[in-house]
Image (cartoon, rainbow, N blue to C red):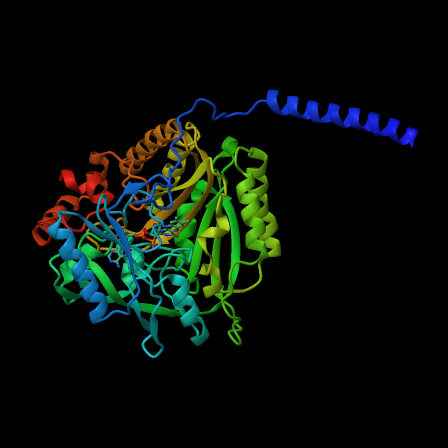
Length: 498
Ligand SMILES: Cc1cc2nc3c(=O)[nH]c(=O)nc-3n(C[C@H](O)[C@H](O)[C@H](O)COP(=O)(O)OP(=O)(O)OC[C@H]3O[C@@H](n4cnc5c(N)ncnc54)[C@H](O)[C@@H]3O)c2cc1C
């Protein structure tokens, strides 16, 4: 017993020493960057406010209503009632879906926020199209279309987003050779700011169609849409690593092969060799198209990839490891077939950062393929010269879109979707704004443009240079909505001044 006590004391002393040592080491070890003394911009979560995926858009609203009705008289009556009350009280109205935009594009300041909750999808397999509730998500579409061998024709690379919302930002994804999602929309029904019901297509109200495609909900409230579907297929991937300088040419060359139906690229993100290596992944239909497996959610591989992705934060060796994993190991391990629907049936949450001190912020730039090498050079100078943690860039092809008034692909473009992990501090926000403006200046100087659903950091002159029809859009909007009833932070930040 006595011996035991002695050992116990020694163990206690050693253990205590270890704990104290550990605490001292923790207290005195460096923490770089430290958040001590910085000004936090974390959201407060005050009731009566609405935020979006950026966590940086907390905005006071008058009220938020959820409408669950199918498209029809009841839904239309509820929308008209909301518009009437808002007009009578001089308040704005705006509809949102997943609110994954990042600059209040789906939030009406002091106004009436509306969200649709209804996943109604009615597929027409003979004509490969669907009639869909404006508020349905891509996950609803895949769940309905997959069992009958169909899937979305054009959508983002994640499945959480709303269908009308996707049209209103005119999003793009991996399918090739496709234009933005608006190119797959045949028609839609909408309630205009004065309460009028309108059906829009390329032949019926064509101006309204072009303004609403990529028009951020400023022209009307869409209730239902007719949108193309595509054949689901079993696909085989091909991986090709190359220097970034030749990526633009190689991407276009690969797309000349009509059998390629999905494609994307990646660049390495270690700072020392930032964006110098590229990986092109193309998918062609397998010879065997029998017994396609049902579209599943994210598998174990996606979860492991997500852990590696997060471990890149502040860790250059991990960035190298991820590149090796993606460009080398994964090309050997994961080269088996996959269905088209499975590739895009991925929720955003898979990559969630779960870090209360940081937020994920996306940027996106659209560059002509023959200027892509210049774009990579620009990023090498501007991004590595910033304070921001850069985690990923995915490259897509977007074909020419001449229909949308606020189009970003007036000629075919490579879209560079870039993901940053941003500290939730004022200093980081200031650095992000400065860096974004520098990138946009550089992108515009090589004939490119930037995407509007993200942070409202562009200067006013950059907005009008990148979107030359913005003034025409604002004038047409004022003519159809003189009370400016349909408004959000995109209008307040940029159109208001035009
Ligand atoms: C993790 C992540 C990945 C992304 N990947 C891609 C990608 O691969 N490709 C790409 O192009 N974009 C991508 N984006 C951007 C994304 O497409 C947009 O942010 C899109 O708006 C998200 O859809 P949402 O349902 O969240 O839209 P919301 O933010 O809710 O709304 C977007 C706009 O649509 C309007 N709107 C919504 N519903 C209606 C309606 N019924 N009537 C009228 N207007 C309406 C809103 O007012 C708002 O202006 C990504 C964003 C995130 C956060």
